Image (cartoon, rainbow, N blue to C red):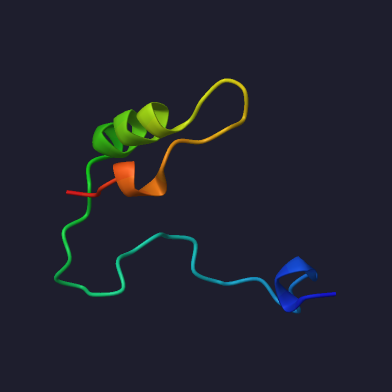
Length: 55
């Protein structure tokens, strides 16, 4: 079984999502929501991931 399908040995203690680069801009939640809503479809399919661009 691939490692990404296995149960983790331990959970991360960090409970936040942060950019890898501290100087990277963090998008507003409303911007992320609108971009995800545009990407997702009701039938479970998806549109092109290239159409999702963070600001």
